[in-house]
Amino acid sequence: MSRGYDDIVAAVPVTVPYVRRSEHGADWFLARALAALVAQSGLRKLVIDGLCASSFTLGPDTAVALTQHVGLSPRYLEWLPMGGACGVVALRRAARAVQAGDADVVACIAGDTANDGSFRDLLAGFSSFSRAAVYPYGAGGANASFALITDAYMHRYGATRQDFGRLCVAQRDNARRNPLALLRGALTLEQYLAARPIAEPLHLFDCVMPCAGADGFLVMQRGRAEALGLRHVRLLGAIERHHAFPDDPVQLRGGWAMDREALWAQAGLAPGDMDVVQTYDDYPVIALMQLEDLGFCAKGEAVAFARAHDFTVDGDLPMNTGGGQLSMGQAGAAGGYLGLVEALRQLTGTAEGRQVAGARHALVSGFGMINYDRGLCSAACVLGQ
Amino acid sequence: MKAAAAAGLFAVQRCRVCGHVQYPPRACCAACLADDPAWEAAAVRPGTVLARTVLHHSHEEMFRARLPLALALVRLAEGPVVLCFAPDRPAIGNAVQVRAALDATGHAVLEAR
Ligand SMILES: [Zn+2]
Image 1 (tube, each protein chain N blue to C red):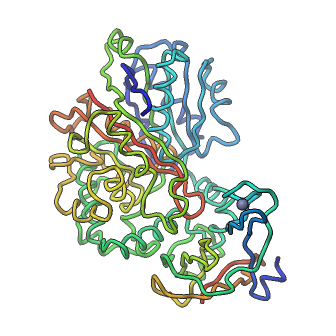
Image 2 (tube, rainbow over the protein chains, first blue to last red; image 1 turned 60 degrees about the horizontal axis):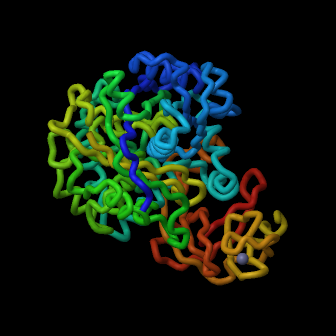
Image 3 (cartoon, helix red, strand yellow; image 1 turned 30 degrees about the vertical axis):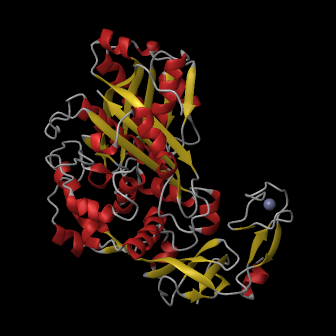
């Protein structure tokens, strides 16, 4: 088993408010996230000597160019093009860097812009496999990929649109208490079921809405956070896995299933100890799959599990308490940070209007990068006060 | 390649060393890393439908006039999984014959019948 993370903490969750579209570039959103980290931590900018960054629309630049944009001289630098897994992976990498003394304070940021051309360009050039063997089949993007996974999951495990709908409605209830959520209108199961089809079996409210925005947090030693008077959260365990189960003909499980025992052993906790759960939810099927693969229920039983639990902020298993991506929007790579930033708010008692009473432990998981027929990156972490 | 597609044929890669069959094509064998995988005719026997979707939205103008578009994920008898057009809307588990065709832009695409 890999070693624990000692007293490494995450602090200062920040969000550059999401907007449907923007004339600003990704560099602007990333800079605003970094500025918020500096302002809210009280640190001088140059004390930040580590940087983890992720973005889909920063091209041709990477984290390297970003150091010159924002005037940082880090001695530890990561570019994590892992989409929905990038937040958990950034925390995992940054924690090791701080633990080993390779950096004192790491800023982890992800952000993207959104405009008429950006989303289509991103899809058209997403990967060499997708360019050759997916995009020419109707250019449906992630909607089409997740539609296929959803169809296989429904067929195999008997999930229905009502099951996915209940999850979407619960998350919308949570979003209505979150001023940062883009979609805050009431959503009923009837409205969900009556929505227009996008890529069957997916309909409108199953599909994440692309937007612009950024999120970030800082990683440092606990002593430093205490000296700065920053509320902080300990990293108790973390896993990542890429291209898991290559022989599965269709993706009905993610990499979490390979590593969940290591995660819970490292954290010294079990799924039942979690007060708050943040699953990656660009489409509801993948949120349910994470509950199975991370051990909250057995494989194929997420539907029954979801029927037996209440995922709202006041429910018995608060999940995606800010509304998740399905109600907050997906600001590109920041979608991989959203659950982590929300968990940090919940565990530091700063989730205004939607605070889960007494939340001490949280699970956050990420999923990213449908390269051809499946998402390649899986990650998860356990956080504690 | 285009001539083969016009004749309905398409190819997958087979490793010359370990026999692993793969799609989409890549620069090495994903099983043993051997260089220069060979090409061989695929879908000689029917494949099996794993999953389906019907697109009602496309990010490209050229597809919008053709919506709704039915697609399927098909496991070839040779092993690899391919995404293809599936205008007959087969059910999961159905046996289908995958063939190549030329799309409106002259690119080879796969179609299950
Ligand atoms: Zn080989």
